[in-house]
Image (cartoon, rainbow, N blue to C red; front, side, top):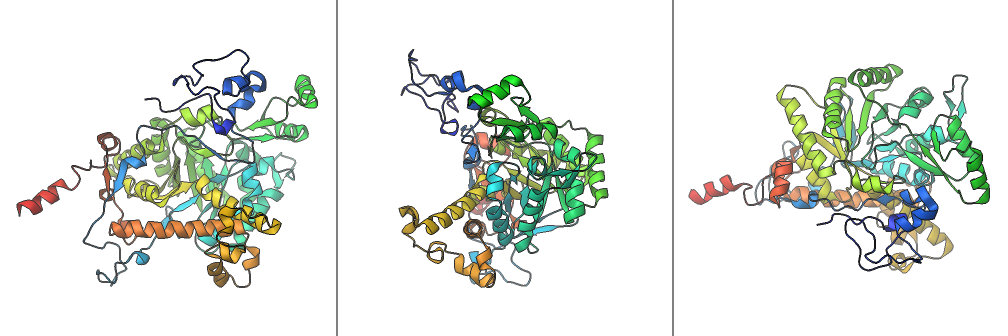
Length: 529
């Protein structure tokens, strides 16, 4: 069985001419001389490296679509007719107390200085991509009013057009970073937090020192990688002067805007955009521990780590070194991942898929626990979009996994709400929206709830933020229903025993019992009684 058809995908704007395609190569079974397109090989013949990336850049997010042999759909959730775990102290279990609206979906993470969240999800790294910049107000306020953590991703200072460097080449002023932090703080209460990521260039530019000194930020995140790629973050820029500025700031810019032939190609209109690439890091135990200590000396209360779908060796390093450094959260991002810009072949064909990498992570955590070593709180990322699969990830990784990091699933509601605002103003609501009403009060089911919470500030909340809040409320209700069905009334009681594997292969990978064996001893004991 072929798990992915290469050479044509909507993400890259390519398609096959023929109905019949060779499964392994993705090439049409009958390739005609004179074909007018438009597979990836055809497009690559005259647009070259552009065919590597989803597009149009800045207008889309892209998610790889390889169909892995085993994923979270191979697990089902157990249901019970008795019991109630996790009810508040003093509450007696019974039909009147054990109702699903009573389920507490709050979670927290941190080694000692805990961060609470209202629901066990938070945003992926919204960094230097155009999607993150253009929609930041929607995302930031939406996360703040929803009570979840927001990750400000890598390279925000480095690509800031208004960046001012001091005599040592380090950040003296970054209006874009200032804007991002200030917007989140407008509506932040005690749930969730804003944390900023660091990569190689961010470290060299002194981003950590800047956000600590100017904004007194409490948490910083080191980044080893992400599930969509392992070669460093990329964006595209359509201005040759900006491309040269990024090169001067230490980034890898391709094609090199300083070359004469590249400048000529840009003038001719053949070359329209430049790629800005970050460098990959080189991780050592000593270097990692020293960096964590350095960041704490700067003044950060919490240090977290984001790592990608690397081999089992790097996963073991992240967990073991993280335990030694007593980091506050380890986010493990599995393949394939979604992103604003990553090479399409790499998104589909690189890295350990999420189901597999979580299974390995849980096994490694157990190994350390048996040695008496405490491991950091863990978040899992990579392809999550609904409460059922989030519950499965929390249960499968219990008691170590405390939250799920979501990328596109938390970005989409922000974009939807923003677009609805545009359509209302222009009087161009599509029928898919207008069937619910023509005003924001009619369309957004949670609008009046937010007006009640923020009576004097509701006008400051953009509709994209309302969209994110509305999505998280749906997520919370759905999670409450699932948890109540498993008789878990707080997240702390969710366990691996609340899952069953639907295939023996899923059992072998995850250690979750196969459905025909799950609870078999207890069931037989009843039959034999």
